[in-house]
Image (cartoon, rainbow, N blue to C red; front, top):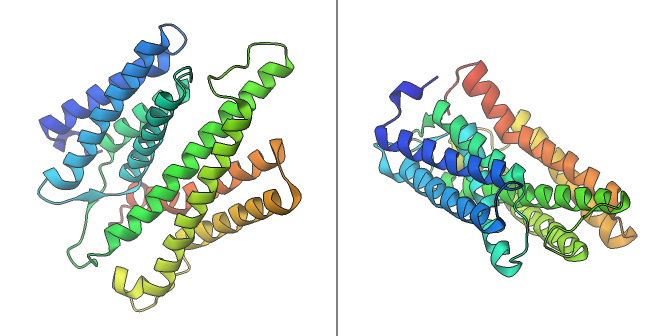
Length: 268
């Protein structure tokens, strides 16, 4: 654990952001949607300040599995904040606040490792593409979960209204998958063709756990998109494949880095 070494500003921003996320998570069903939405915006702003300080405010940027998850959670919050403007009746998913709070506190405990000066200056761009795809697939998973939950409530004759029409939510879900697939493809292509320059290794393609899980995830999403385009896959079948692909992608970087950083103590 590296919690004692956190600066006072980092500690303050982390606890404040986690508290705001917790309010949005626990208060979604207990307080007005307006107050819950304000809590999400406050948490997202504090979280953004925390990420900016971690990347540019310290003596040396840190990165690892927890910061990657933290940025992903922040991107999910950003998309929700934008959607809440377009659909004012959109209900705040309690899982969004829980995800954000957990990501912030996890980064406080595991802030990552200092980036080596030997790494290519283009490597942050490569990581940015990968994390952006993480964020888009995470948004798609949240939408799919809300859609599935709403459909289950409708079947049980309960109120399944989410604040957004189900067909619109389905279209948005797979729009995010489309764009995420493009960014993931760009990330893999950059890694395959420029791996030697990016990481300073002698082998351009390193078939480690990260690469294997990422490629499996890419194949899963590719089959999903092809199945929707040619065979009209919808409903549970499409959602299950989305979950599988997202799980593989999560294992690809965050899972591998967790094993290396936490369980094996390796550096970037």
